[in-house]
Image (tube, helix red, strand yellow):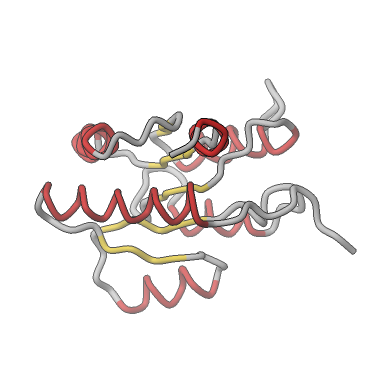
Length: 158
């Protein structure tokens, strides 16, 4: 990979919304094994994801900066604010609605998949059970979202 392409790829941020510490560790290991050097921002709760992206009373969100994630990987079953509500609020925000959002979950429930797509998910990926298969899934996600996918413009064009 040439240096310009590599730096353009590695400066992309990945926001990972997951409340299970074991899944966070597994994801970190899978990214390391695939040599994906992008910054991973982990948040545990749905509200933390919303604060990071959209801001809170204490600070502005990254949607107002150059630190907008290239992709959001989000579980559905989150404490306090679930993944659907996170998705609903992101996709209804003028500054964040174009950020690609991938639901990464163990759910095999068809209604979960339908609701995720109805709310604007870009992809619905079922987490494989084994580490080898999960590592392969992470490699494919990284290749697509960080290398092949063209980032959308930051603001809505009217």
